[in-house]
Structure formats: structure tokens, C-alpha cells
Length: 243
Figure 1 (cartoon, rainbow, N blue to C red):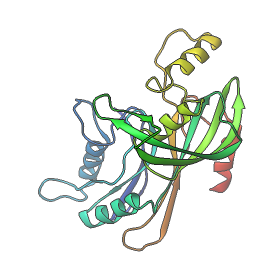
Figure 2 (tube, rainbow, N blue to C red):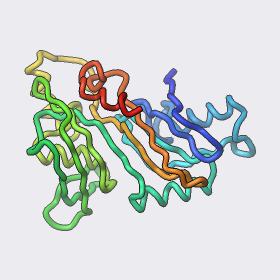
Figure 3 (cartoon, rainbow, N blue to C red):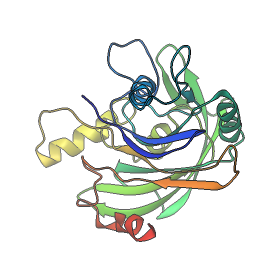
Figure 4 (cartoon, rainbow, N blue to C red):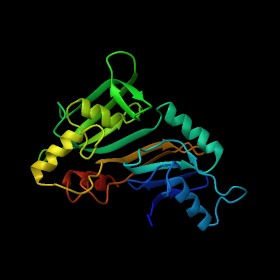
């Protein structure tokens, strides 16, 4: 059974690390989603009971293949406040991404206009129309044709990091929707001929204001397995130093 690491919990919020491959909320699948897991966790603690069981409010999302830090609300009032913070871009969201190739500069801003196709559940960069998408990135380390970058979202669009990095010429390793060719070429170069390829994108830092105390809360985490661990990329040691 999948285990979920709880980073923080009080009467208003619950902060945890979503495992890659687990849905952030219920969907058309028989597999366990994170909301259901957290409700079972609270029932096990005999916390937040009442009719209908514990309350877990979804205030932001991560794609199923993406792991990392998430916050959930434990009551409707906290959910409304946190949802407002996310919609008004009052939160800070940072990600680690492993790219095939490199972006043009060591650090910079990518700004595009994205259009979503609901039929294919994919987004693309368009020259006319679309919604503005902006992110800041900085290069952390390079090795064997891969580049580790930290990304700070300035907007929150559908598949934004995946689409924008691929459009800039250095898509995310393991992203078979937007960077299948880049991933396949790297695998061929390294002699990797089979096996499931992970999507190397991870929510490493989340900052928001507590819905009651208004204190700024910041949580950080690093991938514990896969191609983006601190053992593979020594530059990630700066996270440990900031603790």
C-alpha cells in the first residue's frame, strides 16, 4: 500500500508529499487517490469525524505523474481562504525539473500563451489567443545531457511547466506527452531500451499564509527516489542547508 508523508497538520490545514503516480483527488480509477488516503488517515486518528466523515478540501492540484508538496484544507472556511490565495497568485510554488538539453540561459523567464484542448487533455503554445503563462527558472546542474532546473511558477496553467520547457527546446525527461522524442533519444544514448520512464517533475517548495493565524508557512521536500535525488545531483544540498 502506498504511504504518504505528512509534513504538517493542525485543525485548519494538512500538508503532505503526494507520491508520483497517485491522483491528487478522486477520478475515474479504482486506484487510491490522495484525498481518499487522507480521509482514511484522519479516520484512523479519530479526527475530523461527523456525518460523511472527515473533510478534505482540494485547493490546488498536481498532475498524477508529478510528486511533491501539497496542502489540503480541513474545513470549508480554510478551503475558501486557501483557494483564494492560489487563484490570486498569493502563494509561491517551486518545482524541480530534469530537462533533456538546456534552456537558453542559466536563468530567465519563459512567457507564452497557452491553449488547452479538452479532448486530448493537452495544452500548446499559440501565437494568438490563449492564456498568458509565465515562469522563472534557474539552472542548478548539468550532467550527461540532462539539466536540473528549479522553476517558480508565476501563473498556474494546465501542464504549464511541461509545455513551456518543451516549447523552449528542453522538455522534461520522461514526459511522453510533450517530450517523447527528447526522452527516447536520451534513453537510446544511454542504452536504456525498456522499462517505465518516470516524469521528472517534482513540487519541492510551497509557501502560503495560514488561513487563521495569517502566518507565512513554507514547506520543502526533495525526491527520495528516481533520477532527481540528492545522491544524483549534489547541487540539491542547498535545500538541506536551508533547513
